[in-house]
Length: 163
Image (tube, rainbow, N blue to C red; front, side):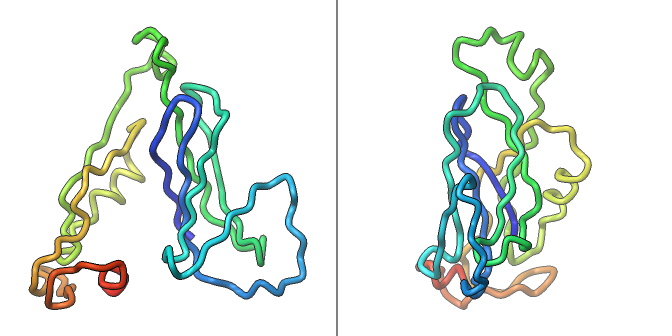
């Protein structure tokens, strides 16, 4: 169950996960103090939750659990809310320099994803930003690791699910 977060504001963030479906007949009641969200095939079993009422310029940790089986949990994610627009520049990020790691143009077919793992494990970046172009749609095979597209331009959500 991977996690991601983004669309950060000073008082809210979007949290995301994707989980494979599990049987819902576990007979366990969920903790009513924990927000619940449900998913299905129409959205590829993804869940996006807006966490609101947060403090500005604050680091938060989050985790997802399967409602049908609370033992199944995601890794712990972390996100920091943006500073309030009235915060003086020298006070943003607790007064420390703000470090960005920026990514773009991955090309799924060629397998160029080592930069993500390296940054996740070895950087002190405060923000990791991906500018786009994760999957290129052209016809043809992968260059280095032979990943293939469908042999035509990808156009539907089902096309992308099969890549």
